[in-house]
Every structure is written in structure tokens, then in C-alpha cells.
Length: 470
Image (cartoon, rainbow, N blue to C red; front, side, top):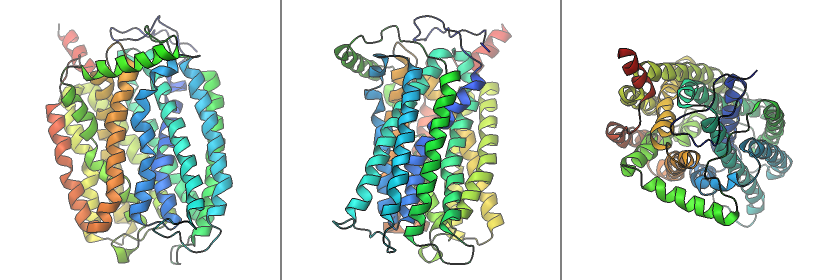
């Protein structure tokens, strides 16, 4: 089935319009793959390190380092134009990820050879157990970041502006479903495989390491299945008009793309928005799951992987889907400019919910579940604004794919990496209750840069309404 719509837009990078299959056949699977990989190497690895015995500061720091690949991915983005098609690199990266996950599945059981938790200070005895796991996670992050570049490239060079806006809600929803699978269902599976019970003590790290090995084996199969699907369904994507012809030309393109990115009008405000929109949420990214599974003696809620997995997998799924769809509908009906501040407020709902959970430490799973639903609903609703703003207000220009990669890398990924890195050390220093106050106050720069966010390109929904009015 081929869409009659052609990829034509005033800002387009396309060398020529190219027909493509129905976006429902490839947009959901592309962004599900992107979300699954990103959450696996960042959030799920955070929980895994905690299960293996690392304290919060070490677990958060090591899992945050994987974000560096997503931060610096713009610098090799133009080089991917040198050979084959964007589709080719999507499939190659997904096959590579399948191999890396298989390697983790093989390696992890050795990390649990001892029943003693891995100590907080990684010394000469335990370094051989941790270093290869971390190295493979970093390789997975680099492959995942490359997958992001070319998958986004397929999206922005295949769909015109109208259809980019149309499918943004689906895009965001499916990326978040990837979060639910990697951060929820797979975590639940780990708990079950490790032998967790509601009333008994938590299993030893050896049990968790074996369980995580099975989960990474399943993830390897999933990536192979996605690669096979995309061989048939994914469009090739289009070459940029100024695609590099050699390595030297590619490096020059990177330089030109970088310079022109920082020459954009109001670049400080554009980057400030990209960097700080999720600032408060970034402080929760690593600490929230560690708080939920942390012992009550340390101020946590004392849940186990199984319960956390059920919450992410069922409650989180429903809330994120509903929130993402409502967010996409809200933007399409009101226009992004009129919606952005409301979306930002919704995105910071989790800061309020975790402040409440940290100070009251409720024991009712029903109450915790309801609060969890509200948190994920706000997250799904508000995240739409971030992605569509970067796509429609920051990316447009002669290097659209590269500039979008700069926006997501230097903005979103850098924010999540830095906040994740410091979050564990800060939480250990001040405790959960004070930490959640700090996370709530961190919403201030998000709101400030949202209010100041410039709009130099037509807001699709607003423009459509104006044309109808004429």
C-alpha cells in the first residue's frame, strides 16, 4: 500500500518526492524501537545495576553515562549520508543491537557468580564483572543513537510538515510504549524470573543477574524481529540535496551544519528550551525507580521489580497512551504556540506526585497506583510539546535532519545525562524527601524557557485555522 501523499515541504531536505507506504506500517515500529533501546540502556540498566547491588549514586552515574552517545550523535549524523540509504542504517543498527543484547545475555550470569552484592566502590576484584557489562551497554547506546538519527531522518525526509504534525502523537506514544516495555514489562519479567515474592526478602544479586540475562536474550530476539519488519515496510528516506560525497566532504558538512545551527535566530532561547524543558523530569529519571524499589528504612517505598513492572507495564501503558493521544489532539486543535505552556505544566506533574510519595510514604498499592497513573498521564501529555517544537521550530533549514539531531542531542539527551549523573549523588547526600523538593523547584527553568520560546516558523494548526478563516 502506497500513500498518495508525497514528501513535499518548503523546509524539506529532499532531492525529490518519494512515494511511501502507509505511515502506520512503519512510524509506530520505528519509534517503538527507538524508545525501547534508549530506555533499555538508560532506565532499565539503572534498575539492573541496583539489582546487582550498586548503591543509588553508582547505579545512576553508570546508567547516565550511556546518554553521552545520544548527546553527541549529531556530530556523526551527516556522515550517514555517505553510503546507502537511511533505511539501510536503521536495519544494520537493529541487527547490531540484537548481537550486543545477546552478548549481555551471555555475560550477565558471570556477574552474579558471588552471592554478595557488588560493593559501592568498584575495585580490582569486581571491576572485571562490571566493566564488560558497561562497555556493551555503551556500544548499545552508540548503536541506538545511530538508529535514532536515521529513523528520524526517514520520518522528516519522507513526511511533509502536515503529516509530521499528524503523526507526532503516534510517534510520541510509540516511543513511550518502548519505555513501558523496557522499563516495565521486562523489569516485571526479571522479578518473576529472580523469584521475588510479596512478603519475602529480595533475591540475591546472583538470581537477578541470571534473570537479566534471559531478558536481554528476549530483547535480542525483539530487535531481530523489528529489523525483519523494517526490511519490508520502512521507506528508504531521501538524500539531502547537499549530501556529502566523501569523508572530507562529510566532515565539512558536519562543520557547516554545526555552524549554521548556532546561527539560527534566537538560538540561545531555542537551545534553552530544548535543554531545560525536561529539566525537572530529568532529576526524577534515575531516582524515581530506585525510590520505588528502595527499602522503607532508607525512605523508599519498598516495592520489588515485579510490582514496579506491573505499574509500568499496565498502569503506565494506559496513562502514556492516553496522555500522548490527548497531547497530540490538544496541539493539533489549539496550535503549538497556544498549547506549549500547558504541556510544560503537565510534564512537571511527576515532580509533584513524587514529592507527595516521598513525604507520605503510603503503603496502599491502590493509592500508589493511582498517583503513578497521574504521573505517567502528565508525562505522556507534556512530552508531545518537546518533540514537535524541536521538529517544527528548531530543525527547519538546509540541514533539517542534522539540526533535529543537534536539538535532541545537545538539548534533550544532554539534559537527561547531566541530571541523571548528578541525581544519585545528590539524593544520597540529602535523602529522598529533600531531593524531591529540589526536583520540584527544578521545574522553574522549564517554565521560564517555555514562556520565552520563540516561534519563527508557522504553527501548522494555527496556520490551518488562519487559512480557513480567510
